[in-house]
Amino acid sequence: MTAVEQRFREFKMPDVGEGLTEAEILKWFVAPGDTVTDGQVVCEVETAKAAVELPIPFDGVVHEVRFDEGTTVDVGTPIISVDTDPGAGEAAPQAAPAAGKPAEAPAAEAEPAEKEGRQANLVGYGAAPASTKRRPRKPLPGSQRSAPAPSAGAPAPQEPAPAPAPPEAVPSPSPAPELNGSGRTARPLAKPPVRKLAKDLGIDLEAVTPSGPDGIITREDVHAAAEAVQTARETPVTAPSRAVEGRERRVPVKGVRKATAQAMVNSAFTAPHVTEFVTVDVTRTMKLVADLKQDPAMAGLRVNPLLLVAKALLVAIRRNPDVNATWDEDNQEIVYKDYVNLGIAAATPRGLIVPNIKDAHAKTLPELASALGELVTTAREGKTTPAAMSGGTVTITNVGVFGIDAGTPILNPGESAILAFGAVKLQPWVHKGEVKPRQVTTLALSFDHRLVDGELGSKVLADVAAVLERPKRLITWA
Image 1 (cartoon, rainbow, N blue to C red):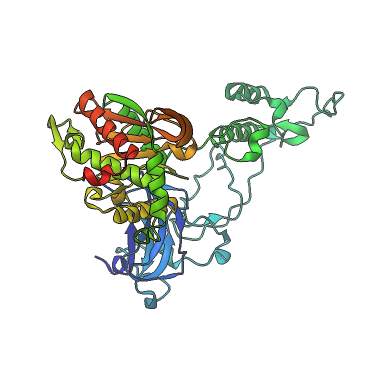
Image 2 (tube, rainbow, N blue to C red; image 1 turned 180 degrees about the vertical axis):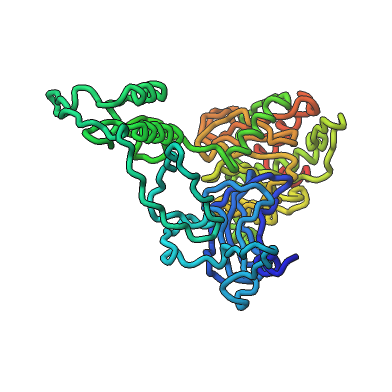
């Protein structure tokens, strides 16, 4: 490792998940010139699974930030460089020049932009010339070839004065353009080759601003108009101000939403889904929720109907353990699991994520309430880690919070069952031989029919309903 490599260290985009290939930089917390220490968070990135904060593993001063916010970067690509020995001087050490060759000034030793006649540019892309670039001039017949361009980093020589145009290149005076009633020329002025170029590029000469003498449209004018059209086509329409031109918005599909879409497509067209429904009287469960909120053992914990639905599902899985499995296509095996990592589908601004509670089957009701509350809070803050979303075995999706009665949920990839919990509503219900208003909800269980047959799926759903109808079964069936 050279002295420069030892001093200027690069921090590469890590794989913060399981085999992820890219991540989007959401926000930088440092800028060039800032001092950083080992373990300090320098940026936040969004992978296909979650938003993650990245700590830097060494001390120093930020030398360069390689990418702007909103850029998607491949794993392993350097995203920031740090000067780990800023006291060594402003300029980085340079390698000795080869024999017979003058030493070239490295980028770190370049003069300030003001001294070189340059303007500041995006970090990581070098300095941009302050003046507008000119097209290279074609050499006149018989003229000597110009000297080669200077090497990178060397000051550019002054541009020689332009050679006088040959007599035949001087345009002859043109009569004043004829105007129509609107004050515009009746026909845009352009030479036949320029008209053909505009036709080939699909450019309307009426919309081109001329820059030639006497209002003549040049080839450069046509190319500029074509570039403007192409840029407009490639720019996504996301700003509300564009609503006047069209009533559509285009947002790039990336990050969590892209991964979720792909996972749902793979799941829907890989696992044969079966969904069953049951409507159940949960009046007693709702009363238990109200009682638990007053229980000192549950003080400070999140107590809601979802908590008891989760507990009911865990009881049903204990009574029907074969539903807690996964299909191994590569080895043609069914993998039965003796633990339950309970996933809870959570809607976030970045899309749907499914973090899971590890070893939920072994938790008491207060422990389950604590884990559920932490899971929801972390998801809403966008701080869910990829590890928290890995290894799930069965999932609950609470569509009832949106006032929805039921649905046909799609399996989380790698899982065999998902339970949808609908809205709890006051409805007329036959209770003890009489029609009374009762708290009623609908449950829907989707399962992978390759390993869960109709009997097993029905037993699981019936057990969940039975526990919610008479929650004392949480004790008697435990």
